[in-house]
Length: 167
Image (cartoon, rainbow, N blue to C red; front, side):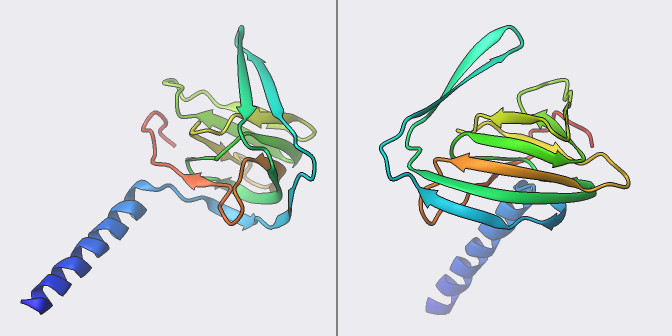
């Protein structure tokens, strides 16, 4: 009886792990992604971003911006980040190459391309997206500054494929 309970528990755990892997969309072609620094603000700060896009205004408040993290991400030709979100807002600077950004909420799956030297804001807070390097020959290099990443936690949260894009 005890063995069958242990086998059933092990089977359920394996099913949960397999199910989690099946719905997650990890990145591909990531050449490197080192965290360059992480720190806590010594002052009590508040961070609010106002994003004006498509005729509307969206205010993104960093609820607890006390933690900040900076990461360099290099995607090889054809690489992508996988569908994901972040705990809080992220400022992205494209250092070289071109980043094409797809929003899970866009039923037409129309990418927005950011060339080298441009920057953009990802609102985080559950906003699911994917970044792709559509080049067949050049690496994409970006620097991301994350806010609201609790100490000891990850800056990236995998998300399932929303099904609106056919890559």
